[in-house]
Image (cartoon, rainbow, N blue to C red; front, top):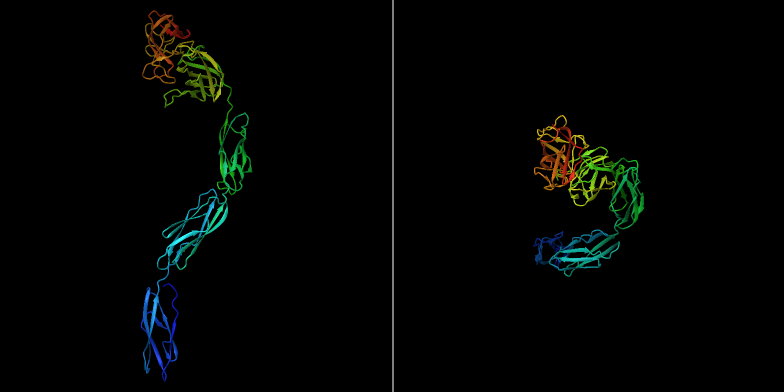
Length: 526
């Protein structure tokens, strides 16, 4: 089965008697045929052909009958036997060539499979062997898995043969040729960093160049070139790794502000070309020197010791922005910010809340944390530039009344009992109540919190207080932090003595814990 059809066989027809013998022939089986002619005159030859197509394995019998009219022994029969054998097993492979490729340093090539089947009859058991040590074979029913072991292989082309043997197969052994191509890895750009940052102050020294190392983390040679995206940015134009790229900035013509640029590194044949180095440049305006010339009580204008929570005024130059900035309350903390317009005021290590900042004046609140040491250093920083440091004494209180002219030496900021402002044209009656605003009262109970705003809970002064108007002591009905104001702004509710003298500018003196305000603020009494 599956082989060549058997060749035709001949029968010689002769006349063993007298006269002429004319014969004809027929067959008895469908698989049995006679080649033309099927009749003739003896002596002659009859050709017999078999057609086994469609027949299963086995033995088939048939006959050829030769007849001749008048022959004494007609007809004659020739027996025909056809033996159809099953085909032998035959090895059939899904592939007879395999190719693997590998670049050193890359991913190992995937294994490949060869399907081993029997295209003949019967069955066979097969085995596989390799001619190369770098070939790994794994057998499973009907499948041979081929993998490569890359250890120790250098760039080259390797060939091997897999021999598949089956003892019962008619075409055993069969071969599968295998080719493995190992190549060197391509060059790869490797940078010591992909960022560079420069800072420049207008009129100052140009920033020093920065260097970045370029190496080849792949194979072969790496020749690189560099290009810049900005006119103020330049770099070493080219090189061969390993080498150094030098980045230079030219900021002298740039206005203050942030600038972004990029250096692009390209290398023909590199697997990861191009690579980009991002470059940032910050150009800042020249900051004038920061100088403190004075520190005073914001209400009285008096210099001297400071108290926790006191609102103070610092004057000088370069203290803050040219255009003054007023404070805001941080919505997250509910406190006055300690940085305003780039200005920071430090009392020792404690940052003070700032209510106003300009180049020549700062209004700030002494942190409550300064209590304890007898003196403390005060310094201003603007845009990171520090001022001179001054040392001030620390007292438990340093009271001063706010005045309408903000000098501390005129009409105090006060409200009469009817809510109208007190003043020479609107004096308070003797025995009436006045509300006065001041600072420097020191710590409160509950304690004041640096930068916080006084809410519904009243905070009373922690130290005893007396108030005199025109030399006459008034009754203090309330002394503490002014509600809705930042801690440090104090409020006094007093009742004037009936013996208070009349006058449009009676001296107001506030004494807290033995520390008195200057007698320069005034009140008007009928």
